[in-house]
Image (cartoon, rainbow, N blue to C red; front, side, top):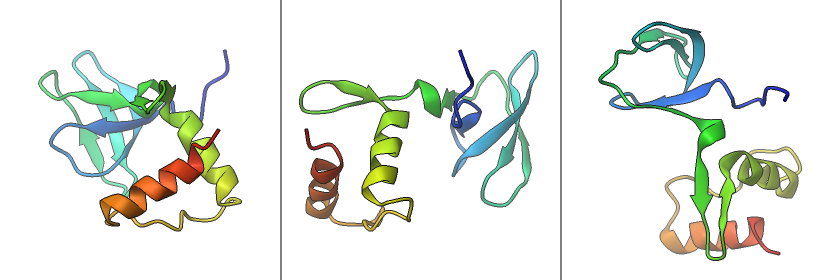
Length: 102
């Protein structure tokens, strides 16, 4: 099985933003912040989530986050998403109904 683009992208509890996993240790990981390129060393007390393992629950079923990213990429033709993360609930719902329409 080939490695996905987001297999090494993480979220870390207590830390803001996304991180790229650089190495695994006995008690956690060494990661690099995608925002400021600073190294972070995690410990056993911190929750680590790999983006490729996240599934999103929709109205009908659940789907991998990676599939949603792919649909967004295709809808936007490779450009940045036109909806902002701080948009209203209604704007976000309308955007994702467009992304996920059957």
